Structure formats: structure tokens, C-alpha cells
Image: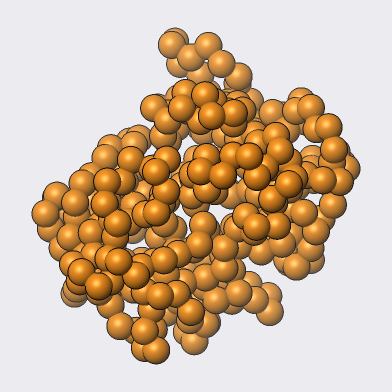
Length: 284
């Protein structure tokens, strides 16, 4: 159990919006500061986990933690400020979009499984993201940046519908400077776009993979994108034991009681959201 969680998973903690960053149309990153001083010092999470963000009178929504509260690679300045990148998609997220810096909300968490960053040590790593799916993978990037010597070749393949829909583009130069290859593509180009056009799986098809058996792939995005990404990876020689996906369902309780996020025999909130592909292949 995380240091932030008590024995009562329903217990929420007050958080203040320290900063809001516009990322793309309808997408913003909220840097939430825990108000309890002891909680700020002890809060821990693993890359890929999520929090439940509660709006009194409206409900709550599961949002992946999209950065790092420990690592210097993140631009978060103080411990206990937790970034969440949120797309307006429903009643609660639309209400969140009306909040301003200085406003408060409630956090429950962190919950769920995490990306197997320890298993990737000593191996090559490929991160494949589509749209807002880069948000749950960004903590992996920060983890790698702070431990770059622990990993082999690291590549980020990122696709979005349009150039304006890409997240965190102001960070890509820094990632590249630190030895992470970043390759991007869009479904539809505009007049200023001079990069790749096409689905992100094309980037994977073209990628040079020196040692498929010693390569870990992590992917997050629309399920159809992840399915074709996985098929490409398997054709390139990666083992299905080395391919991981992050799934999204309507998570209401975060502890597997309500059943809203049931996916075959799995509950996304407690068994996921991160799964090895071979565990969900038959139902994905």
C-alpha cells in the first residue's frame, strides 16, 4: 500500500491547485499540492498509477499521475505537488476545467498497478503513445532521465490526430538531449507541420530494433492503436511477456467493488490499469 493511503481507501485528502498549464485544446495539466504537510513528505506513487479526483457535489474521476514528485527531471518545484493531465470529456472533467489556480479539490489514492520500470533495467525500452496516452507514460520518461545509465536504447514513439493536439512538445528537446529518441507523427498535418504523417504504428514498423528479445515495450492510447502496436511488436520479435498496456475503463470506486471497470475477469482499477499483454490478450 502506498504511503499516501491509509487503511481506509475511501479517505480523501485536500489538494490546492498550485499551477495550471494548457497543453492542447481541451487538455490541461493541473499541479495539485497536498495541503497536509506530513502527506506532502510521505506521498509516493509508481509510474502508471492514478488518483481519484473528487469534486464535491459532482463526483470523482480517475486520472493518471502524469509526472514526478521526486525526480529533478520534472519541473515540479516542491515535494507533494502532483501533476495530472486532464482532457475535458465528461461532467467532472468539465467542472475541473472551470477551476482556477488556488482552488481546492479532493484526492484519493494512488491506486492501481504500475509500469514495470525495474524489469526494464538493462534492456532497451520503447514507449508508444497515442494522444493523451502520453500522460501515463511521461512518469516513465522522467524515471529514465534520472537513471539514464540503467537502460539501453530508449525510444518514444508518439502520435496525435493533429500537431496542435500533441502534449509536452516543449520537453522533447530535453528528452533528446538526455539520450532518448523521440519520433512523432500526426494523422492530419497542417501548413506548419514538416514531420511524419500517418499512424504511430508506422513509426514502430520502421524502427531499428537491435535486440528484440531484450526489449521492453510499453503502450498507452486508444485500444485499436495499442492492438496494432502490439501486433507490430510481436512481428518484430518482441516477446508478449515484454509488452505492457495501460487500459482505461469507467473506474468509480478504485478498489474493485463497484464492478464498473470489469474487463473479463480483471478489474482495471485494482488489477490494472497496467497489464502485461499476455494477461489480457484473449479479451483485448
